[in-house]
Image (cartoon, rainbow, N blue to C red; front, side):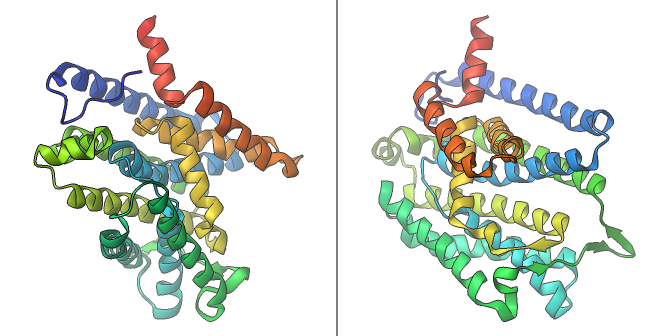
Length: 327
């Protein structure tokens, strides 16, 4: 599959329109799927698993923006995911902040933190950038684990339910619809971003930073924008996970969680917003399928990632799109 057109493509109008048509169509199909699943699956467990897939897909969408559009690698995505989740847990329980306000604070805090730390670390490139963002994830997980008086430490902490006035937002079915709605909004925003001048400038970074700079694109500013947007996606997803589960452990900010987010977009297709959904579905369902042999889960996940990079380097969704066009 040809990569999505960028700001550097002089004749990119028609391919760009075709790219957006395919993805708006895919978004419509996903919306129909989300609407139909509750009527097909009566099991609360399956609905909860589906809601988890939607939330993880939303978080992985942030890496689609950062890596798929701007070409920047991050191994610290789970850091923002965990910060937001714990802010939503701590503020209402300890400081009597309304849960809805706590969500807004969590998202703003993650966006501000990404803006502050993004300026220095985004000067790095390649594996240096990956290591710097890895340090962020490790630091956040370390603080959450060691500050037991505030976070509950390794034992975790409970999360008060979301309340809007006198209404308490609880229950698997309610959170299924909320998480599904958030995912659809997130994908729509990602598609619109790709079509915007900002998105085309970000895509120019993937092709060649030198060429992009020669065309007047502010490289540092665009990288920082992508980093902040990715952090906001992770923050919204982290807050949703905390409120849906009602309990948190430090694993939400772990290094392995960051690796899983990267694996989701790589397996599904880093250039496609729908690839985040495909990758999240595979990597969320796989542990359930291997529940009887948990010792082989990491081996199988690693094997899938390796085979995907060898045989489907562009990811599952782009490969399926190519086959569809050929037929």
